[in-house]
Length: 385
Image (cartoon, rainbow, N blue to C red):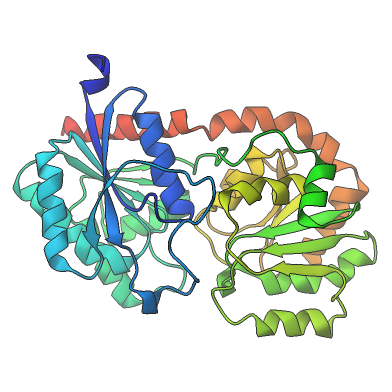
């Protein structure tokens, strides 16, 4: 190991492999990037969510090609003794900077305890990387718990200006850096053609829309379904809804039936393994995020990796991640007519070829290298204080 690589030591605290999902992927990608110029260690969970709190089928990544990473699995989300143990282990790792993934107040007591041990032992600067400052379905209890966790942090990195404002209302005068969610490009092999991808997922030629990711009410899928009859009056587009339902599927199925869209909308109701993601994005022409609330979304960054334009709603940090009329369109939330109009415009005015030249530059803006530089810059700033 070179002298340069051991000058600084980062300790990452949060889920990584064997856990599935965007935050695990994020933590792993960030660790890999930081390891290019620093020493990196990771403390992981041995139990993330208790089973009764997790709405999906499994919390573990069952992909044939998982995004693997080395970590010490110490933290049990409901066992306070493991929080103390994780804090003590982090102290022994002698980090300069501790990067904690923050996304839900359920984990506030664990973050507070681990951070408290590190603070007590004066070991390293604690930075919370916030995926959601507050959850989408928030309450006053959530705000109080977030305040508890935020009290132990020396600095924060958020991924939208809206989240920065929320954070500053909870902890005034916090040291906050805003940096966008980086690109998820590890799914892309570049080996699939659109025709091959369509064959792999069982779709024929023709305009194809994609809604991707787990389904909950705040993602606004119902508005997209309601937009489809208007779309079909002008464009013979089909819609793929790909992701596990974290709520009752029946209202969505009933809406599809009521609107006579049974042959137009196809549900793939499951978590998609890493090696399958490429097929769905390469097969699709346009990715739709009809959210009614958001902070940011990893789905936009997956679409960017595959040069796929998006239609997003004007909520949270989504507009910040889309270069309007370069990598996508931004429309008002809760508006099926606006969604339909953007989709019709995309196909009717040939926006696929018009947007194609802009993706290479946007990928640079959302690189993991830029994220690592933002983290390092924030850490050096708070170390001087």
